[in-house]
Image 1 (spheres, rainbow, N blue to C red):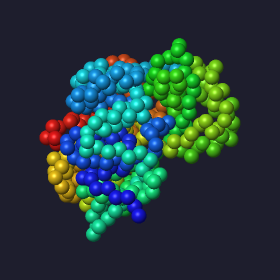
Image 2: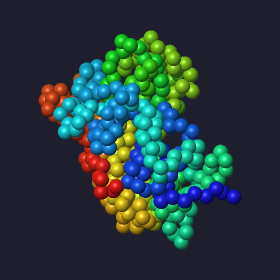
Image 3: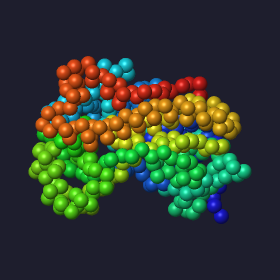
Image 4: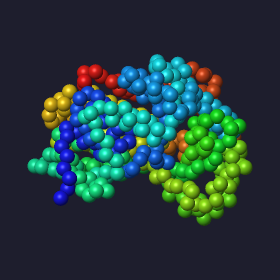
Amino acid sequence: MAEKLQTRCVIAGGGPAGIMAGYLLARAGVPVIVLEKHADFFRDFRGDTIHPSTLELMRELGLLDEFLKQPHQVVRELRAVVNGQVVTIADFTKLPTRCKFIAFMPQWDFLNFLSSHARRFPNFQLHMETEVVDLLIDNGRVTGVRAKTPRGELDVHADLVIGADGRHSIIQSRAGFQRREFGVPIDVLWMRISKKQNDPEQTLGFFQHGKLLVLLDRGDYWQCGFVIPKGGFDEIKARGLPQFQNDIVSFAGFLRDRVAELDEWTKIKLLTVQINRLRDWCREGLLCIGDSAHAMSPAGGVGINLAIQDAVATANLLARKLRTGPVSVDDLLKVQARREWPTRLIQAMQVFIHRQVVTGQMSDWKGSLPFVVRLLKWFPVLRQIPARFIGIGPRPEHYCSRGR
């Protein structure tokens, strides 16, 4: 027999969307249970960027000062090395926010911080090592989830199920939602290389003849993302590790003395890049948010912040009604209506970046700079445009006390 629990809201997935939604709903007085399939939040593929819009939300929640005491790097400008020339792409110092910078913080630290604060609410529960495997449905309405735990099966019945279980969402598939896919011509090879004290400061990336290397500063090592044509990993393997090591050094020469750390292919992971979104984000008793509703590319590092804004909109629009009972499909559609437009805009921009910049235009400029990049170099004021798009986004969400 499965163990049974009852709550107002159950959230599948303990990523940024799930933990933030759980925190905000619990803060608003809604009994909530978050189910996370792993034993901890540590994942190499999690994004590190906490953008100014998210930092502004932390200020609104009264958590900013404590949050900024956590280990992080402050990045006030995003710079790129384009065909050997250093160019500032985005300048965050003029943004209308308290924190005019991106905080680079390992996502597991962010999730540990936020979940520790959520646990202070008596109506919040976080169950680790609890993998959602199915939906509970009664007369067409989703009434809960079934999960696997080390102790056996668990059924959680709830007035609302929120799917926040990522791009491979079991909630999404069990609900029968249709997904629209946008072709992405790239994948990313993900690896670690040790970091030294005199290494250059973190940049947005190294662009060279249509190719891209991204380095994320994680304290004592660089998390490296090497962009390749989709499906091209086998060809790279066939060329051999020494050639791949040389490719890395051709972008970032300062890694020459330690690129040999990549001495076997098992240290190099393939991250398949996707851009997609659901046609419908909800049905009776169920709402999908974050990557479960719309998988984003790593371009701009905006995925985590878009997921968080989904969570904020969900709490703002649903918390008051959810405190006392179920919410209707019309209520859930309001969340999709509010968040779908910025999602569409950002995904369209990501598709453009992939097709025209990473795999197209930049390869045509050889040792020179693409025209758009030249404009950013010639007219520094223009750097505020990508800064606002990346740092704040087209529709930032703010904590609304009406939900309390």
